[in-house]
Length: 156
Image 1 (cartoon, rainbow, N blue to C red):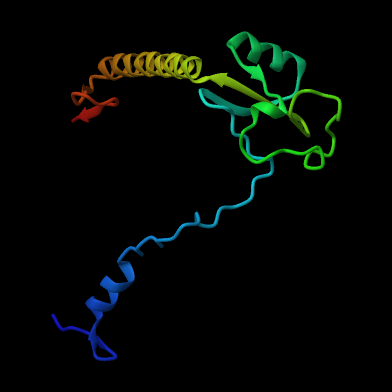
Image 2: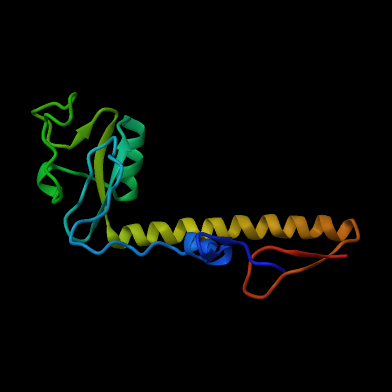
């Protein structure tokens, strides 16, 4: 096998140089990020913020789940001025932007909500895998479930 040389260096060295990951820049400022369509929210300590569709049924559902409407004093990040929200009502206490309203939930409630959703997903996955195992078995196909993993390996 012959080595191709470009400008006095072997081709492999050139390829290694190209494929080498770039080292992250060190500095005090964060790197470039694309702008967001909506203003960035940052809730006070112990809460997680989120923009929610501003529809009465959706707001009622979120409030029943433990979400709280955010007021300007709850937003500890960059101040969201009424000039930033062209359709905001200056007399409103909530932070609004176009078709959205700012809400926040306590971190404990968010963790419980996330765990509930994870368990629902696990149950649905188990049900799907159980049904597919039954279908494979009826077709005479053996499967193997690796320990500690979801999914199946077909044994032929």
